[in-house]
Image 1: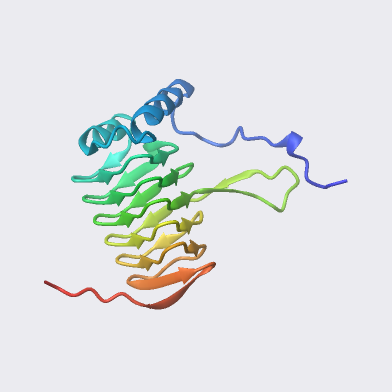
Image 2: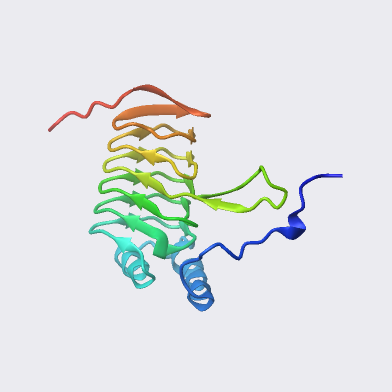
Length: 185
């Protein structure tokens, strides 16, 4: 017998942030316009995210096949980029700074479960990606992580701890491998 009892899982304390019907409407809009490769237009995507309560800066680029759980918990800074097949699992707030890039197939996850108790209750923590930071393709960012300004997360990394400003990290778990030096033009 296992001591885990998922039959008693209780999610009533989780606050989705909007009504059931707004969430249903978002899922329909998301499936048609965000998760589809047939709708590559940036301005309408920015407009729709704002209509659903997201904070979206100027010049934000959102590529096709992007999954956003709750747009009302999303903050995108000016001229940030969200690549193809990115999943912004925004059970809690996700803040992406200005001029930051979330490359294709990255996964930002704000939710986990409490493994210490038999009912495996949901835990959420916000994620923050600093101005000018780059999250490499196929990387995963864990709940509660803060990625500092101009940090660089290399391809396929799993980030479970905060990343300092301008740090270069890679691996699973991601470890610092250097400092990002940005040349002025």
